[in-house]
Image (cartoon, rainbow, N blue to C red):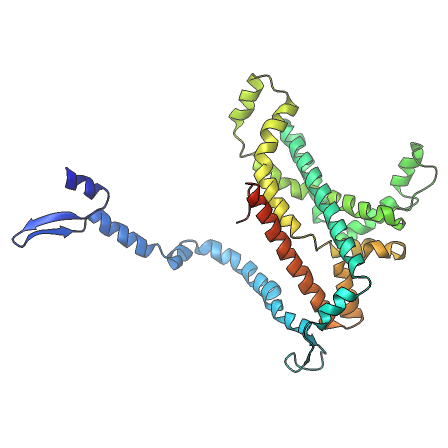
Length: 339
């Protein structure tokens, strides 16, 4: 019985012959060893060759447009000029970074970038969760699908078109000002895009309008994994709809919210070039100058390529530090984290 039990777990059993008693591998052990040999990386790759083939164009795209340009970072440590080879440039060390930190508008650009990104992050997550909660409570499937479709549509509109729509809506003779004056909220039209104090909020809410439907998809998907028995038990106990949202839905969404928050914190140095560039004007330039526009001005307009590269490296390093810091804080608080 003792040897029988060991054979069941794949351990060696013993064979008795003229040579005496000697251990022999069981068939289970041999089959397991063979399966491990077959279960290699390339074997798995071959089994999933259809998925690999479909993802190949995206892998090539990422390598060409995301990883190969990293080699250009060498320009940040040179006085780069396009007429010469990249290896035949004058090396200046960290001089471009020193000039960046000593630039009089550096802290203004840093402030604008972080504040605009933080407003977008806060408003975007709040309204996306709110929309997802509202759609999750809708029982009329037809109405739910129509609402979802309408909320998704702005995401597929380019910022060139969306910026013109925002300008028309917020113009002094636009529909927003007409509604405000009709309700006697204001006495005269407001130049929303010309008031520095309002410009950041215009960017924030126009970002929400364009992204809310797409961002809500993730939260709606997370809600489908919540056990329906929890809602049924809460209803039996007399919990109202708001109580079910507060004590069941939101706690279940917390892991998803934390992960998305960590990822979005890493994007604080990316305020959204297209949106800001298309909606800015001379009156709000001090509130609209972000790092992407800063790089454009120095890199393409002034042809200071090395300085613009140094700005890009600074943004990338800060983004990595922000992600690692947010992930570490989540780990210390025993929350969901990336790694």
